[in-house]
Length: 263
Length: 257
Image (cartoon, rainbow over all chains, first blue to last red):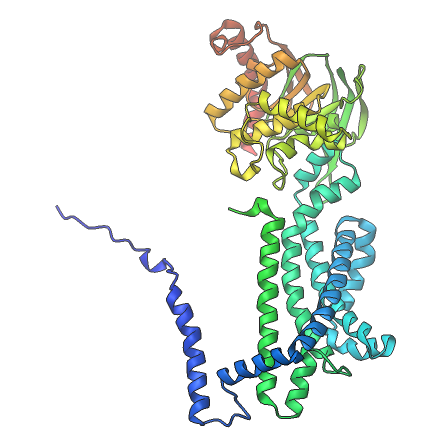
């Protein structure tokens, strides 16, 4: 009689978390970058050191220069995002729920969605002027499409059984939208918000490179023109922080808004 | 409240646009406080019949009437679904309150009536849970509590226990009978399970396979309240045998397709 030990053959599929490695990889990259800058292989003009960028950022923070740029950008970002998201959700529901909305909305969205929104910036400037409205509008437009399309998809995924149940218990049209369709679409709406946040940041920088005197996009472009590479890097780091922060904030908001999805 | 189904026909368009007759000339009267089971092989249109009575579908021909006085603040019909159909974003408490919200019942009374139905269905202590945190049996209790909360004159049940395991189903049947003894609603109970139909109902309406027609109405001569031991009684076994002989050929035909 032979005895064959049963090996755990799926062992290699297990994924460990490697927390220390995460931190080490990030710190290692920064350390290598710092070393390259210190040794002087690359001139500071092309690649400022991480510590130099940190120092410059601190100085700009203390002088209030950075706060001004960040405030200007945040305002454009938040207003554009709010307007675009609200319109997107509204249109998404109208197109997803109402047959008339679908007939009118689908071809319009299909025709306008593929346009790169940056291409519309000159047109928006022509219509709305060089001031804030055109900047906000291009961000709103960029957020609108992912929001509308995701909301539409979410509305379409609403379980017909739940809609029937709501109607069986006396729900009319608006009750069905508010109490069944909208909560069903919420996960997709949040996914849309994440997509929109990325697009908004991209369009913000693009919009701030034309005819403005403030904002992070302006800071980056201006510093680049003056060959102030360290300042430029500060702007890029701030943009990266904004991206990380919005992602984290939306994640928190989603967990708050969708308590039934947790565990 | 009586339910009168008068010569009802329902025709669907299938995927290719071809008309499919699901129900053909159904005549059926459910008396007030009667417990009627509608039984038939799969695809006989019994769920369609229930949706028609609930007003979720419109009949192609014929008409459906609800006869009797509905007290103010009472809803004529409420439905319990096979797949529970609970709102995943609502807790047990707010799921049960749903129908009351739609009926415009003030918040305080909603909470009171929901609490009573939650107690009646043995859900005490689970008020703040979400459906995904409950077992199948508990979920269907919520489904029943939600229906009872609106105090419907007619309770429509669409294979309410067929998604549950056999033991849970048995217990839930007992509980439903216990609740019915107290509330005495008119119940239309759709099922494909002969034993369940005979055990619970006053009368079993047997439908043919598509297009659904009424094959027979079998009166169940078992006393109330029903108890498990009655499943061995001659009246029970005769009724089961009679119904099985009615639908055996039909079921065999379904199998051959």
